[in-house]
Amino acid sequence: MQAPNFRLDGKVALVTGSSKGLGKAMAFALGAAGAKVAFNYANGKEWAEKTFAEYEAAGHKGGLFRASVVDPAEVARLTDEIAAKLGPVDILVLNATPAQPLKPIEEYDWEFYQSMLDFFVKSPYLLARATLPHMKRQKWGRIINITSEVFNRGVSPFSAYVAAKGAQVGWSRSMAGELAPFNITVNMIAPGWIPVERHENDPEHEKEAYRRLIPMGRWGVPSDCGGACVFLASDAAGFITGQDIHVNGGMTVV
Image (cartoon, rainbow, N blue to C red; front, side):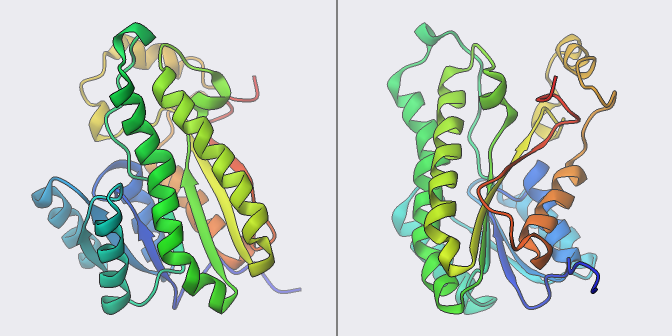
């Protein structure tokens, strides 16, 4: 019996929103596994360039691409540019996210709800439509949606984000069945609260209150998501589809 194959040599991966945080960790992990990784960002050019320079310095292959993943024209341009520079996308990691304020429902407006749906339903739809023709032709592909434990835990007051994440889960499950005959898997990674750059100013008492709830007794780190991403992208996970892998130290089993 052969050992599981976790290598991604010869594959091209696109990780949206990959200049910071969990997206950065997943992009680096995919690159370390041998994939050519397309880093994507919409804002913060200086930070994105710094991240990609760090990635190249580590000896990994890829490219840096600026595009809004909620704009149809920019998504089309993005995937064309990646194909021209690196090759067509084999592994699609849908990670880009906007700000996520917690508010009572009376303080949200529909425009904010729509922005959540744009990132977590419209963007996956646009990117899947753009990358699936290649995946279907070669009868191999990976779509990995970054969801969240908030849907399963029903976190409040967070209705706009939680509702959009629920829609993202439903979309992924439906697509898993639709694409299975083409040997294309669609899975999800649902992180818990893993402190990254955007959490630097979060109140310490709130962080500590959450940490005390984690059954494993420690904070998650970005590389925890990186490992899960490489596994789901690899041939070792070729018979796994439609699953939502919770990377949260057991928060959703208690």
